[in-house]
Amino acid sequence: MALLTLKLPFIIKLFLFLATIKGVVGYCYTSIFGFGDSLADTGNLCLNHSCLSPPYGETYFHHPTGRCSNGRLIIDFTAESLGLPLVQPYLGIKNGSGISIQEGINFAVAGATALDASFFVERGIDVSTDISLGVQLDWFKEILPSLCNTSSKCNEIFGSSLFLMGEIGGNDYNYPFFLHRSIEEIQTFVPLVIKAIASAINELIELGAVTLMVPGNLPIGCSAAYLTSYETADTDQYDPETGCLNWLNKFSEYHNDQLQKELSRIQALHPHTNIIYADFYNSSMRFYRNPSQYGFTGGALTACCGGGGPYNCNTSAECGDPSASACDDPSKYVSWDGVHLTEAAYRWITTGLLDGPYTIPQISISCVSQDA
Image (cartoon, rainbow, N blue to C red):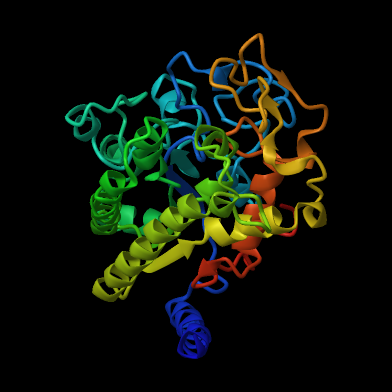
């Protein structure tokens, strides 16, 4: 344990030093390109889904926007902090919304996986969409002629862009976990998921991406949906401090550990790039450990919007269904609908990323306009 204590500060300092010499610190971003799933989807979801029904979007937008929350997401808060407009969904632009794409596009889709849908079909696992990370990458390539018609122009635009890679990969585990597939089977998916994420990162780098922020997985053992699905009388399975399921959080940590190792490998291969790991896990664990300190007096584990049960999460009455109801003040809750978080929780996670210390290397937003 003492060895780890000595090594961690050194690693962090090394990352920060490398970030400084490569120009991340004080670097200005002129656009954001987003990929991922429902944690990042700002309106690409075109299926008949509950996220398109009230009370989704009630807090900030005052109507459903396709975001699976009561308000803004991490990508929204990131854009605001960088002085950029909210990142518009690709499908809205493709369908002729007239929105400029010069300040970025969001390709994230709720339900998306890192692995292709065929991977799950072959294993008898139903997925809600066939729009994987690979499909999103194809969408990005489709808009390239509209963004830049020469490699030098592309390098100019992408050199000052922030590429947000998710979160992606969570659904690759959610689908089989909610079918109660064995953890032994699901663990075999991890290297494949990491490989898919790495492949997309490498391809974006080849296309000119310089700065990529790659999130890890959230602590799924604290999710109301998982706590409901895997509820047990065995108290030893729960963390006495948080009430989260230990074994599920350990799985998230395993994924995150493998992802960080792969990002380090990619960074070594592409020293001109800035590969930033976004530690969603620890940025959110702060308020699971001490919810009242962050204003979550309604609780960290109980969903604001749902249809009852110990964690107000019920698959027969999901948020958005007529039989479900929402709490009066979502800002007092971490969980919005059992799977997704509230705007307040996403705000705290983003603050932890942009103000520190939950990105490695630390991303700087010192170039933000005072008017932003």
